[in-house]
Amino acid sequence: MNADLLHTSRPFGMGFWPLAEDAPAVAPRREEVRIVVEDGGLVRGILWTPGSGASRRSAVLLAHPRGDFTVHYACPLLASAGFPVLGIATRYLNNDTDCLHEKCALDVAAAAAHLRHLGYEAVVLFGNSGGGSLTALAHVEHGCGDGWVGVAAHPGEGVFMENVIDPAVADESDPLSVVEALDMYNPANGWRPWPEPSSYDPAWLETYRAAQRARVARIDAVAHEALAVQQRNREAARKLDRGTEVWRHMRRRAVHTPYLTIYRTLADPAYLDPEIEPDDRPLGSLFAFPDPFDANYGMGGLARTMTPRGWLSTWSSISSRARLADTLPDVRVPSLVLHATADTEIRLSQARALRDASGSDDMTYHEVKGAPHYLEGHRPETMHLVSEWIAARFP
Image 1 (cartoon, rainbow, N blue to C red):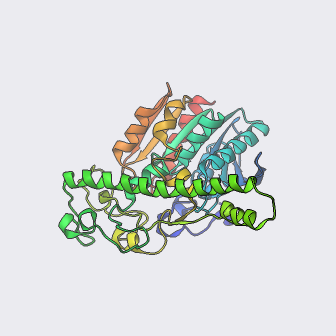
Image 2: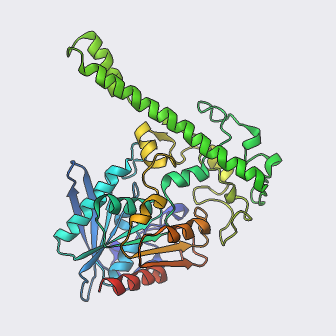
Image 3: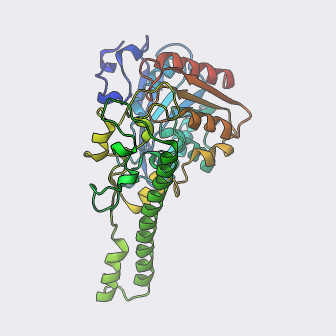
């Protein structure tokens, strides 16, 4: 193994390659790729090709809305199996604030077109975690894949957000405001201090889930109104003489972007109650260190600071178009769904719903027993399964 391919694994199980046990026997070759998208967006990537042996004429494309999949653990493992693999970072690398899935889908389509330009006859889209809903959206909107693979793919970032957003926020401007009857971290509702498991009443949980969706709807309303105000001021400014005081007044409001600050987005009762859709998962969340209570109120957090359009495109379960329930019926190419049964973020019912929503006549579903979200400890054998599945369909 080449020394320059060995690095320290990332903290908190973020799961990108390499971990020492995941290193392939033969180091793949790597080539930097830069792609200018039709609208001027810039995509960067790394093309991993087999270090020895014949390279297949089918290529694999990995993408995530914001994650750096140029160094995803699947890249060297699939390349060592003989598949050229292009891992990309979209134009929104590490930029959640204004992430637009529609633009990310353009980036995926451009990367697929680049692979075809290089002579690869088939492109298999590979979506891990939030990459699943992105690559499916890209295929539906741009027809850019000949196969689709979802590995620990949640139903969509907005759907995920609805499951974890805290409905007990009484006032969006006050991160410590609490509606006690909706607080999953209230002992009266079944919470117990970490690491003791909590126990939530099913009837209370039903009310809780409805309140989560209601909070998403309230944030959506604020975002839509902010965009409407911008649009009204754009239209008003176009009717005025350029340079006048009134025009400048309207122009300021037309270009001003208010930011949404969204507190407390780590409040899924299933994190602490193992009786909610039982599976192999441990208590807690991969976003918590280790107690979700602390992470829910602590610094950072998913979707903490968003533009209105970024929230609607990415994190809204109501408005985002990157929902696998909506896109998978139109993904009619061969499809593979792999679910990690110890995933703290994705329930078995959600993974099986993806299987059942598929519009493909060639759908394969497999559960990786005991694997966490990023498949630590299960990567080589899982990628072997993926490579065998691809080889059988794209020889």
